[in-house]
Image (cartoon, rainbow over all chains, first blue to last red; front, side):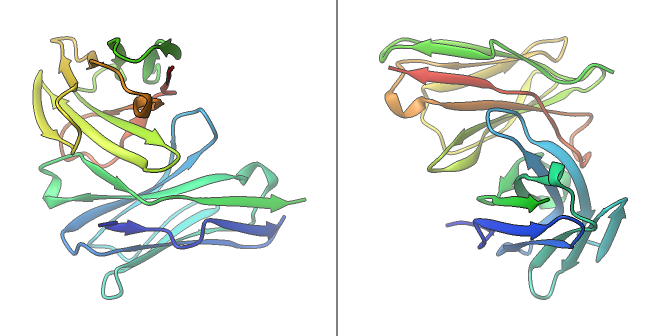
Length: 114
Length: 113
């Protein structure tokens, strides 16, 4: 049972435009959500996170939105740059911090066209 | 601060052998988690350690084991390797349990022939 889902395997965006990556989850006990960027054969790089008590978090060009009623979060990248091209994973942590276990989505490959 | 280091970076083994992978977390971090990434299953949680104690374990067979030392360095071991164990093994470093951000190392790429 996939508790965290990224339904779009890939996304192509023009440089300078907005990239929106989506993630859905099924477990209402998740209390923290993170986005990671990953290149092949490298470890994921942390981008931005959000606690379940918030609905928005912003860091430079990256903004994460959380809609708890819909169990949906999204990552907005504005403006998109060619260097943003990578696989993006959303991850969820559950159970009030008693564990650091992250459950990852399947990833979305973002291609930013110059 | 130096980041998370993992050794070795690449490894080739044959079926039936065993392998030990090492992870050194960020200085001052006391919690380490391990993940396996494969094309078919994505990133899957293996186990996590804090203060030399395993706090949580993923749904992997007993051939997968790990430990953490007093200096927070961690090792994971896979015995009786199978072809399906070929994967990128990632270690994540966390300051304290419940702290939100996990920082990943570069991974160890294991190929089982």
